[in-house]
Length: 358
Ligand code: SF4
Image (cartoon, rainbow, N blue to C red; front, side, top):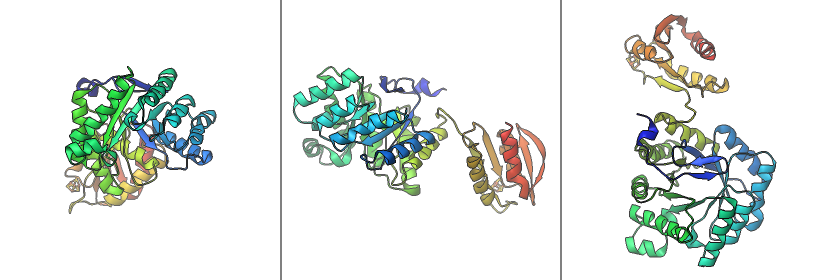
């Protein structure tokens, strides 16, 4: 079954050249962590993110002066859609919308008077800029926190719907929603509530997930389980790390679910055991490194690296290319056939050479 056959049907919105929602591919987002006033540093990081495969780059806009980053980056050739991240200040939001931001992230309930919300909506409407409402468990309204006692899934969803209602009153529905929590279960349930109650595209993320394996696992479960049920239109994997690493993490999640727009190399490798007769652990890391260096890691093929002649041949035959280890050597498989025997020391070079020809 194709992903879009069971995907929640959300409304399409457009941020610059990118469509989010509907049947559009799940887009990958990240956020710069440079000082926005440092245009050069922000440009370099935005470019690095774009080159890594980021579809949307969010940049914080802490004051009115900072919004010039959007036009400056575009002047320098950045075509990746840019999102202005704004808290409270409606003037920054208006300025960002008319200065080249492709999307605004602001919560209308935090702007102040209705007139101010109206002014932001007018600017976004005129420029065709959507608004993302982003609710986090750490910044819920007092009234909602009081009602629910803590940032529950219901509280997060209610807050997002409340902010959306302020825009709907002005007949503005060019909206995306996000409800994020550092608690994976809460984030999952909050998104499920929104998925039932609205058709706005959903931006998924487990916030403050941390770093390393723990963060990756939290995000994979939170974002991955929702996507596996057809919920979600764009994702951000928050890592306490270089934002460029968020892109690889997001791609790995999409690849694992088979819903990546640009599927990469799928590597199958056995966990090794007492039967393993080649140095598979080392071979795998060498192979991953070489594949990346040679630019083969985004090639849409399945590669099997297996440690022995018992379970190895089965997996290697199923893959586009693979090896099954023997003593100091391995059998090389391609498209289900044994091609030849190769010496252990030549495995990486020969695999890479074969893959380059595929
Ligand atoms: Fe062990 Fe062979 Fe299975 Fe690898 S494929 S874990 S070496 S039995």
